[in-house]
Image 1 (cartoon, rainbow, N blue to C red):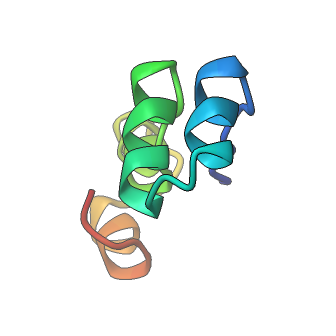
Image 2 (cartoon, one colour):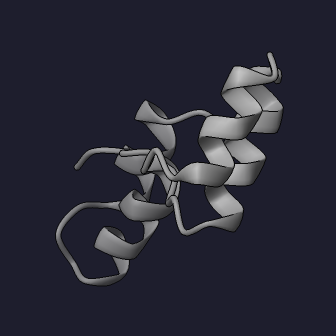
Length: 61
């Protein structure tokens, strides 16, 4: 599993403007980014891993 952040125009603007990590994450998530925890939860629902493992290795969103 991995977390990727698409660098679209909205994210680029926040980065160039000196936005905080939280602001960058919020814009990226509004534009389709999925956190590692969310991807992990979806994979646990598909039976690919356990929810316990996902919670153990990820931070809260």
